[in-house]
Amino acid sequence: MSMVNADSTQLLTILKNLQNSISSIETTKNSVKLKYQQLGNEWNDKKYYELGNIVKDCNKALNDLLQIMLQTEKYVASLAKSIQEYDNVSLDTNSAHNSFVQSLRVPNTGNSSYEYCLGVLTQGSMPSGYSGILSNRHENAEKSVKEVFDHYAGKLMIRDSEYPPNQTAHYSPANYIGHSRGVYYNAIADMTNPRGAGTTYFHELAHMIDHAACNYQNNLSNTPEFAAALIDDGQRILNLYNNLSPERQAAFLNRIRQNSAHSFSDLIDATTNGQLHGSYGHSRNYWTRAGNLQAEAFAHFFEASMGGQDKLELLSNFFPTAFGIFSSMIDSIRPDNQVRILSRER
Ligand SMILES: [Zn+2]
Image (cartoon, rainbow, N blue to C red; front, side, top):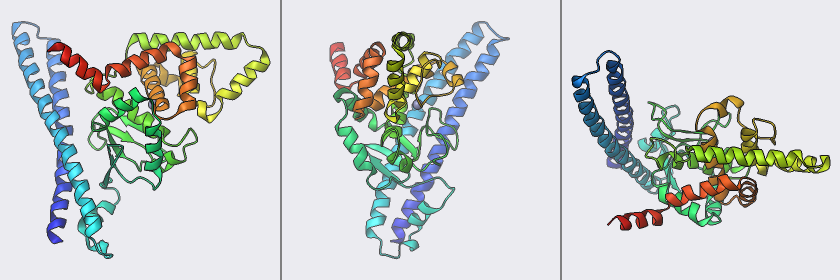
């Protein structure tokens, strides 16, 4: 047993070092780029152009390195998880003696227990019964969206499934030291989520897929057409609403105030500048940031498509143009579609 303990502790150290290195490469990359741009303000000739090529090469080398590091990180994490499983089964009841298991339980050092859920590497624990809920939603998902989820599952990561429930669940797109790229949320809270169990899980992972689909350089959803379609659809709903009788207006408001209409409420609030909304919505300030409307719509449509049938009906009926664009986005990143594109190129 002592051999196993030593190995798994080392593995955890390697994982931490890897994560620090990844952050430091990203910092270097950004600072080289910034310095080059600053130079350009005072120095703009042939030499600057040549330097530009060197910076480009340097950037490419750093990017390649980064990709390798990220893959290695994932590999080491899954190895740590396997060893943890081994430790769990081979331990006698006196598990407190096992240094690896102990290290997993030490608070404030980052949660180091790993598991896979729907193929997504998850740091932190999942409450019992939760994975069954997620699997059930996954089974009832729209075929094309499910295919995209499965295709990207290996690239996704939940960084913390035990994020404090009083803090906002989120996907962190940047790789900050101590706050790496991935999803932070509370799995226990999501199990009894009033908006539907598993809503936060699929919503936040959808944000990560949106980002991963563009190699973390942009969001797939970030197009002017998608924004325009969302606003057009929202304005049409507002017009329809304004022409309803007071009784039917009240009935409509009643419907969109229900928990199951949370995503509809959020999008109608955003696209009518707060003139129409139910019980859920982001702040006005949030919607002023470019790309946020499209990113939220993408995540809402995606989450609804992952086994949220009643939400899906509401969204696709009332936001038909935007939903059509979302569907083509999904089609563009479906695995069989990518194969088709590749074979056409041959
Ligand atoms: Zn969101």
